[in-house]
Image (cartoon, rainbow, N blue to C red; front, side, top):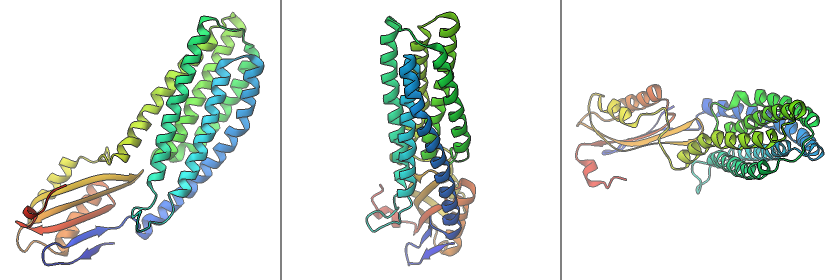
Length: 316
């Protein structure tokens, strides 16, 4: 659907975010993600208690670190669920884009939480490496195996929404790193049980901490990029500008901005300078179709201007 505002100097094309088809698809995706998060949250909360008890009984830092990470998983999943609900609130006159960025904020908080947890784990692991305590390897392995199963199920549940939603990806990363932590705790428990290597527990914890930092970095970078209105990674702004300039009748492009509102929702605005007689609906339609079909941007606002008009503007 096109919305065209006509004027003598500067007709404007608007391609709305909330077209019926996009809205319906978005609502279905939101419902599916809500179910994924709810199921995974229930699994994590149920097993987190078991890991805490098992870690205390076996005196295993790796298990307690894994339980702490599971607690952060539960908090992350709860935050993701809240953000999913809050982001669907309608736009207002003060929040004209609505509350979509809530999901990005939740993703950023989850990434920061992952980093904070990893720092604690690393510090505690280094302390224990100096004097490794005695650990009950058999119990440690049993609890870690149960955690591994729970995390694998959680990953399978969340897998469908992680590629197109940073909020879901943040929750998925929490569960992924927790799963790898369970694997490391399982291996460490085996080394302690069969070889008597008590130092394997803090070493496993140290590896968990480093892994968490690594996995959280890309999520934090992408979340900050969205909040700083960086152009989406799949859009080459110079290529976009050149493509518009190649259209017949186009003399220039200025004030071109491309940004992400939230995961999967890109926007573009710009001023297109046209030759006399080249304006109108036909030109607006060409520009909109080019941007939408070639670059995948769904929300487009273009202002057409005759040559000389933009010279009186102060570009942003």
